[in-house]
Image (cartoon, rainbow, N blue to C red; front, side):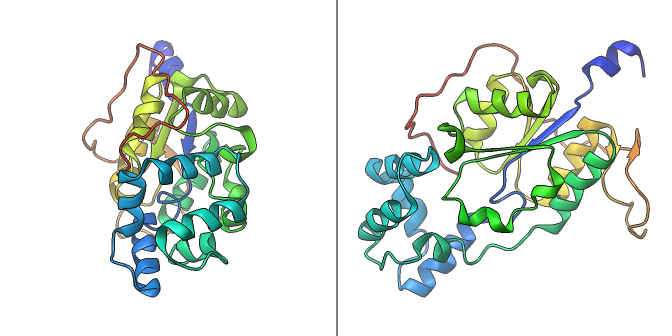
Length: 250
C-alpha cells in the first residue's frame, strides 16, 4: 500500500446500538404490539405519520424530556399502560453477537471505535457492550440527535479520528445520509453478513474467520472479503439537519 493510500485508509469505526449491535428494533416493537393487543406496525406508523409522536421521540433522544414523561405521553397515543413502556418496547431485543465481535476485532486491530446512538432513556444501555468502544456519544447526554451533523463530528472527535477517515454503520437511511454529509463512509445495516463484508473491504481487515475455520484467528489486515456493493460517500455540503426533523424512518 502506498503512503498516500495509507493516509486515506479509514481509521475509525462508529456504530449505532439498537438494530446494529442488537436484533431488529422494529421486530421488537411488533412483538410489543402482539403482547399489547395492537396491530403490528402500530409503533412504526405512529412515528412515521404523527408529527407529535416524532417530536416527542426527538425530545427524548435529546434528553429534553424525562423517561417517565415520554412513557406517559406515548402510552396515551398508543392506548396502553405507561408503566415500564420503554422496557416493554425493547423487550424483544437480543445482542447481535456477530456485529459485537466484529467491532471488537476492528478495535483489536488498531481501529478506533465509537458508539453514536439516539437514546431511549439510559436504562437500555445497561445491556450495551461498552467495553468494545474507545468512546461513546449518547444523544440524551449531549443534547443532539442523529442525523444532526454535530453528533457525527462529536463522535469522530471523541475517538480522535477525522470524520473523513471514519466508517459509520446505522440501520436507518436518514442517519446514514447524515454521516455521509459530513464526509464519512457509511453502511446501511440490514444483516450482519453484508455489513461485516462491507467493513472488511473498507477497513482492509478480516473481522471474522473464513467459513469453516474456528474463532482462534485474529483480525488480519489486507485480507478482506470479496467486495459487496460499495457504500455511498458524499464529500460536499454540511448536510445540516434541523432538530425535530421528521425525515423517513426505515
